[in-house]
Length: 298
Ligand SMILES: [Zn+2]
Image 1 (cartoon, rainbow, N blue to C red):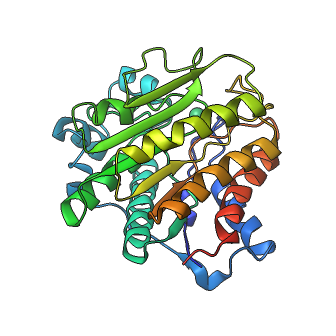
Image 2: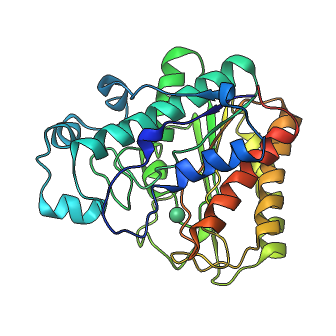
C-alpha cells in the first residue's frame, strides 16, 4: 500500500499556528504503527511551473517564483516568502498530482501526507495556501485522461479558492461542508456548500454528510478528491465545530466507503489541523490514513 510524502514539507515559517512539522510526524506515526512500511512511501517531485499555470495566473506565479510579492500579498498569504517555502509547497502540489495519478491508474485510494491548500485562488494565495494543489491535480488529470471530478472538502474552513477556480466548470463538482461563521469571510459559491452552526457536533455533522454524499455522486465524477481537514476537531484553535476524534473517524469512513461502493479512485489530502496539542492533529490525520488502509491501499 502506498502513500505520498516528502520531508520537504517541513518548512521553516517561523513561529506560526500552522505546524508544518505535522507532515513529518504523521509519516513517522504511520510507520511506527505499521500502517505503512518504508517501501510504501512515494516521494514526489515538485510540480512543474507549467502545471501550476493550468490554474494560476502568469503574474502570480512570477511573483512567487521571483520573490517579488508585496507586503499585502504576504499578509494575505500569511506565510513568509522564501525559496524554501516555494519549493516545499511546489513539492506538495506535486504530491497531490502523484496521489491522484496513482489513484486513477490503479482505480484505488491513495493518500497524500500533505496537500489540501484550498484557500489559494488563481491570482493570489491566502490562508497558508500558496498554490491550490487539488485544483492543479484536477487540471492535470483533465489534460491526461478524465473529464469529470468531484472535490469533497471537509476542512472546517470553506474551500473558497477551489470553489472560485471551478465556478464556471460544470465538469468539476465542489462540495464544501464547513463552519459558516469562520474564515474566509467571502465564500464563493461551490456546487454544494453546507455552512454549519458554531458548535455543531458529531451526530448532526455525520447526518448532514450522509445526506450530501449522494448529491456529490450524482455529478458522475471519474475521480474523487477528499480534503480530510483535522480542524473540525473540538479542541482546534482555528475551528469552532465540536467533532470528537471518533466523530472524525466516522466522517472519514463515510467518505471512504462511498468511494469504494462507487468503485471510484480517491485521492486523500490532509488540509488543516491546529489542535492545541499537535499530537492530536497528528493522531487525527494518521487515523484518516489508517481508515483508508483498512480495506487496503494500492
Ligand atoms: Zn482549515
